[in-house]
Image (tube, rainbow, N blue to C red):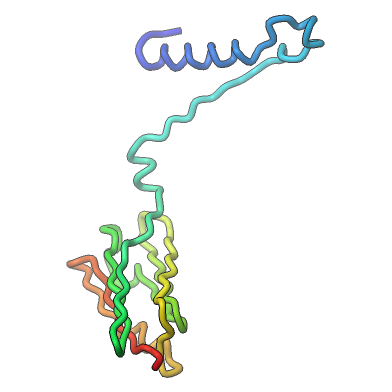
Length: 144
């Protein structure tokens, strides 16, 4: 029993278990009369917010000679070490590794092939990261 929220939750569990029990054990051959346990787990807003990995928002712009990707970073990104960037022939992989949240990996399709000159790590190093504005900007040449 009890009063308030605890009492209401107890009543919900009690009603749920009563629904699961057999009203006539003879008719159900003894099924539905075993011991039962129910548990309520309550996730607070703070728990859900701090544990959820959220993909960053991004915008891809294809120009005549280059592809530009602009990414809005979450507030949890505090240093350049929290960001890893890998560039493929037509995708940019962004890995965010904030200290207080889960690692997030986002593959950003570019829509066109790009030309890294055989050195995608150089293109990744030329990305501009603004921790103050919480943005990442990457511009890479298109494959013509």
